Length: 188
Image (tube, rainbow, N blue to C red; front, side, top):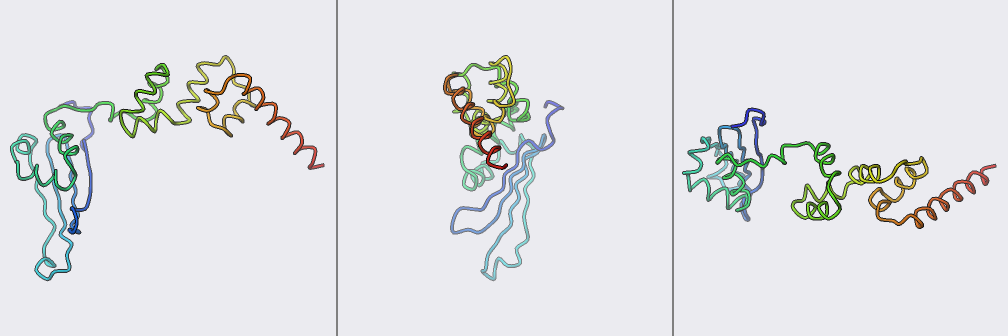
C-alpha cells in the first residue's frame, strides 16, 4: 500500500436504521477495517450492554459476508462498495488531495470540463462553484484586475463576473463608482 497515504483511509459514523437508536462507527485504516457499535436502548436487557468492536484485516473483511451485510444495512451499498475498493487497494487518490491543490488543477480546465467535473461529486460541485476557483479563472483570462473590479467581484462573485459580458461589467463598475461618489458627497 502506498506509504504516503494517511493511516485512516475512511471514517463514517451513523445511527442504525429505525427504530434502532444504536450508534455505529466504521473506520478503514491502511491495514484494518474497524467496526464499532454502541447499543442505546431503554429496555432493561440492553442497559448493561457494553460497546463492541470488530477488527479485521482487509483480506478478512473481504471474506466476512456477515459484517458486509451489517455495513450495507447501516451505511448503505455505496459505502460498502467504497470500503471494498479500499480493501482491494483501489484508492480514490483525488480524495486525498487538498482543496487548494484541486482548485489549482481545476483552474486549468476549459469551461466544459469544469461543468462536467462539477457533476461528478458533491465535493467537486462545491469546488467548481467556489469563488476561489473563479477568481483564478478570471485572473488567467484578464491581463489586469483593478481594485474596482475586485470590489465588484466581492459584491457579485467571481463566477458571475466571469460570465458577465464586458459592456455589462463596465456599466456595473460605473454605477458602483457613482454610488460610492454620491455616498462620499452625502457625508459632507
